[in-house]
Image (cartoon, rainbow, N blue to C red; front, top):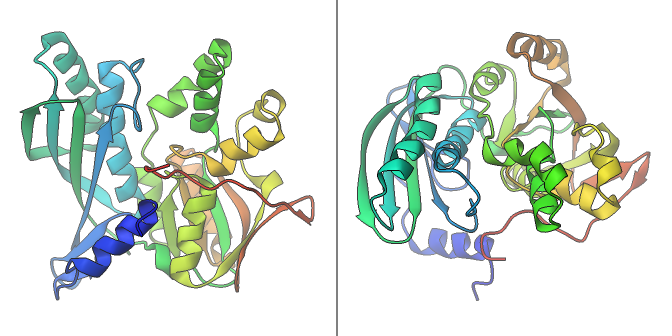
Length: 316
């Protein structure tokens, strides 16, 4: 019986052909990888954004446009690759000149920043929906979820918890704190430059779109390893722990999605090079744990801490 998002994906994989001699990576990672030649590949990802699960009525049109493209670009960053082209299909309830121009202004902000080219798409009438497919190329090694090695260090970029905290404050009608964290929810920055730099030195990578707990579980399950995470080392926003109560705080930093930071693993001998990447990209990169033989453990001041929540699921 199909009960959740994971069950649905398993059913599709068991009933639809996903293999070809030209495919290096099919379903199961942040992107699919299609072979061009011995050195180059196309990196392809697609996401749909809907009113409700991905944005709410308080989003401005430019924020919807920006975030719809940004989430796709984050997948390309997680593979350590460079985005080049995109296709976009949009379904609109009506033709609203002001709304449409604002929407594409948000899209164009990222198009200009990452020198993207629009190569196709579709337009329809109906409930608001945006589907974007981004095509990238690799410059260096492609990063996969399945290549973490025992004793690797585990890192995250930036700070975690801001997007989930914004949702918590919004649901609690705490407008003051919601405004403080709103930008982390509505305008996540795709870590393209960092992804490209760590592709030379990391073993595995994933973007934190569904929460660190769920996304790190994807790495360890596909790599057939385990992990130990030190909760006190997870980088987050100042005063967040003081504002949120214990369970909500941990929900925001490990259980909530939409941070769109990178979580990656690398050999211990790469520590100096990773510090160099942090300086070069002017971005905080924090070691938070180690890859082990089995199980995912969260530790707080030397003691194991267990949680009764998971990551984001579209059907829960």
